[in-house]
Amino acid sequence: HGNHDNSSLVRGLEKIGWKDCGYMIRWKANRVTMYVSHFPMDIGERPNQFSIHGHIHSNESRLLNQINVCTDSSLFNDKIGQPIPLKDVVDLIEKRRKMIIDKLKIDEAAAAALLTKYGSVRAAITNYKL
Image (cartoon, rainbow, N blue to C red; front, side, top):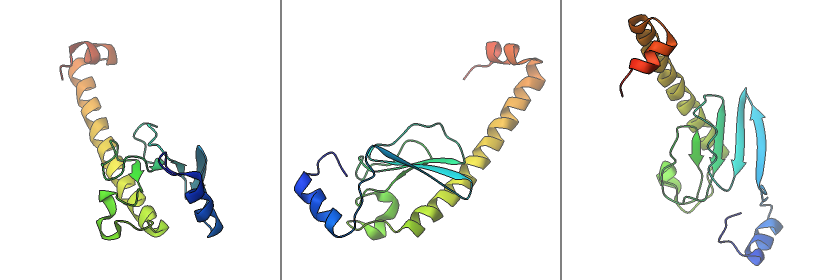
Protein backbone atom coordinates (compact mmCIF):
# COMPACT_ATOMS: atom_id res chain seq x y z
CA HIS A 1 0.00 0.00 0.00
CA GLY A 2 1.02 3.62 -0.39
CA ASN A 3 2.76 5.79 2.11
CA HIS A 4 -0.34 8.03 2.25
CA ASP A 5 -2.86 5.22 2.83
CA ASN A 6 -4.44 4.95 6.24
CA SER A 7 -4.91 1.61 7.94
CA SER A 8 -8.75 1.65 7.78
CA LEU A 9 -8.56 2.03 3.98
CA VAL A 10 -6.06 -0.83 3.78
CA ARG A 11 -8.22 -3.08 5.98
CA GLY A 12 -11.23 -2.34 3.76
CA LEU A 13 -9.29 -3.19 0.61
CA GLU A 14 -7.99 -6.41 2.17
CA LYS A 15 -11.60 -7.48 2.84
CA ILE A 16 -12.32 -7.39 -0.89
CA GLY A 17 -9.21 -9.40 -1.83
CA TRP A 18 -6.50 -6.73 -2.19
CA LYS A 19 -3.11 -7.84 -0.91
CA ASP A 20 -0.36 -5.65 0.47
CA CYS A 21 3.08 -6.55 -0.91
CA GLY A 22 4.76 -5.37 2.29
CA TYR A 23 8.25 -4.05 1.67
CA MET A 24 8.83 -6.12 -1.47
CA ILE A 25 7.80 -9.29 -3.25
CA ARG A 26 10.28 -11.03 -5.57
CA TRP A 27 8.46 -12.81 -8.37
CA LYS A 28 10.00 -14.78 -11.23
CA ALA A 29 8.24 -15.81 -14.44
CA ASN A 30 9.52 -16.61 -17.94
CA ARG A 31 13.15 -15.92 -16.93
CA VAL A 32 12.26 -12.40 -15.75
CA THR A 33 12.62 -11.42 -12.10
CA MET A 34 10.20 -8.76 -10.90
CA TYR A 35 10.58 -6.85 -7.67
CA VAL A 36 7.16 -5.57 -6.63
CA SER A 37 7.34 -2.76 -4.09
CA HIS A 38 5.90 0.60 -3.20
CA PHE A 39 9.05 2.52 -4.17
CA PRO A 40 10.95 2.23 -7.48
CA MET A 41 14.10 0.15 -7.05
CA ASP A 42 17.32 0.99 -8.83
CA ILE A 43 18.48 -2.48 -9.86
CA GLY A 44 20.47 -1.42 -12.92
CA GLU A 45 19.03 -1.46 -16.40
CA ARG A 46 18.89 -5.19 -17.08
CA PRO A 47 16.57 -6.92 -19.54
CA ASN A 48 15.63 -9.72 -17.13
CA GLN A 49 15.00 -7.72 -13.95
CA PHE A 50 12.18 -5.23 -13.43
CA SER A 51 11.03 -3.01 -10.60
CA ILE A 52 7.22 -2.91 -10.52
CA HIS A 53 6.27 -0.04 -8.24
CA GLY A 54 4.06 2.86 -7.30
CA HIS A 55 4.90 5.91 -5.17
CA ILE A 56 5.74 8.39 -7.94
CA HIS A 57 2.11 8.94 -9.03
CA SER A 58 1.98 10.25 -12.63
CA ASN A 59 5.74 10.76 -12.99
CA GLU A 60 7.72 8.59 -15.38
CA SER A 61 10.27 6.18 -13.92
CA ARG A 62 13.93 6.87 -14.54
CA LEU A 63 14.94 3.53 -16.07
CA LEU A 64 13.35 1.34 -18.73
CA ASN A 65 13.07 -1.56 -16.30
CA GLN A 66 11.12 0.43 -13.72
CA ILE A 67 7.37 0.09 -14.34
CA ASN A 68 5.16 2.62 -12.54
CA VAL A 69 1.79 0.99 -11.83
CA CYS A 70 0.24 3.86 -9.85
CA THR A 71 -3.39 4.33 -10.76
CA ASP A 72 -2.42 7.77 -12.08
CA SER A 73 0.59 6.52 -14.08
CA SER A 74 1.09 8.16 -17.46
CA LEU A 75 2.13 4.74 -18.86
CA PHE A 76 -1.45 3.56 -18.76
CA ASN A 77 -3.42 6.70 -19.76
CA ASP A 78 -6.51 4.72 -20.75
CA LYS A 79 -6.73 3.28 -17.22
CA ILE A 80 -6.16 6.35 -15.02
CA GLY A 81 -7.81 5.81 -11.65
CA GLN A 82 -8.11 2.04 -12.15
CA PRO A 83 -5.93 -0.89 -11.14
CA ILE A 84 -3.54 -1.84 -13.96
CA PRO A 85 -4.32 -5.29 -15.41
CA LEU A 86 -1.44 -7.77 -15.11
CA LYS A 87 -1.58 -8.44 -18.87
CA ASP A 88 -0.81 -4.75 -19.55
CA VAL A 89 2.19 -4.88 -17.21
CA VAL A 90 3.47 -8.11 -18.83
CA ASP A 91 3.07 -6.60 -22.32
CA LEU A 92 5.01 -3.50 -21.27
CA ILE A 93 7.77 -5.61 -19.69
CA GLU A 94 8.20 -7.53 -22.96
CA LYS A 95 8.33 -4.30 -24.98
CA ARG A 96 10.85 -2.74 -22.61
CA ARG A 97 12.98 -5.93 -22.50
CA LYS A 98 13.46 -5.61 -26.26
CA MET A 99 14.32 -1.92 -25.90
CA ILE A 100 16.93 -2.67 -23.23
CA ILE A 101 18.46 -5.50 -25.29
CA ASP A 102 18.70 -3.19 -28.32
CA LYS A 103 20.28 -0.48 -26.15
CA LEU A 104 22.83 -2.96 -24.77
CA LYS A 105 23.74 -4.06 -28.31
CA ILE A 106 24.46 -0.43 -29.20
CA ASP A 107 26.54 -0.04 -26.01
CA GLU A 108 28.49 -3.22 -26.86
CA ALA A 109 29.14 -1.94 -30.39
CA ALA A 110 30.36 1.41 -29.02
CA ALA A 111 32.62 -0.37 -26.52
CA ALA A 112 34.07 -2.58 -29.26
CA ALA A 113 34.78 0.50 -31.41
CA LEU A 114 36.61 2.15 -28.48
CA LEU A 115 38.68 -0.97 -27.86
CA THR A 116 39.62 -1.12 -31.53
CA LYS A 117 40.58 2.56 -31.51
CA TYR A 118 42.57 2.57 -28.25
CA GLY A 119 43.81 -1.03 -28.05
CA SER A 120 42.95 -1.76 -24.40
CA VAL A 121 40.22 -1.16 -21.85
CA ARG A 122 42.55 1.02 -19.74
CA ALA A 123 43.51 3.21 -22.73
CA ALA A 124 39.86 3.49 -23.84
CA ILE A 125 38.76 4.61 -20.34
CA THR A 126 41.68 7.03 -20.03
CA ASN A 127 41.18 8.63 -23.47
CA TYR A 128 37.42 8.50 -23.98
CA LYS A 129 35.67 11.86 -23.54
CA LEU A 130 31.94 12.09 -22.98
